[in-house]
Length: 152
Picture 1 (cartoon, rainbow, N blue to C red):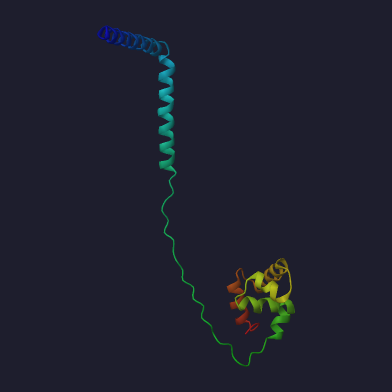
Picture 2: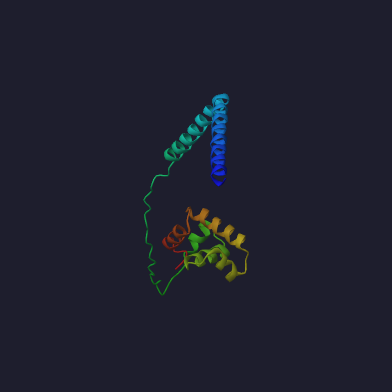
């Protein structure tokens, strides 16, 4: 009896597997256009993503490292400000003070704390100093200020 149950179960399993295979084949035949269209869409999507990543890959850039070293140059003991140049440029005493603090290497926030101004006011004074000295950066302003004997 055990043998018959096993043989019956095996034949039933083979029959079910065969029917599933036939159903699968009919499914493939009936929906073949949709299946092939989906496969082509997936293929083109993968190809498009791959080409997009390959063509828009960032090029390696070589970054230069600039080492800036501050060299302190002692000011002459007897520094005299060129008041004629100050008047000619139209620098106010507060702008001169901000320029001196910039020359000391302070940030806008540090300058604001030291002279009891808001940071925006310090930025305004700095930009006016830059305009009057015809420079764009803090380092250029300091260099120009020293050349014109505005700061020590």
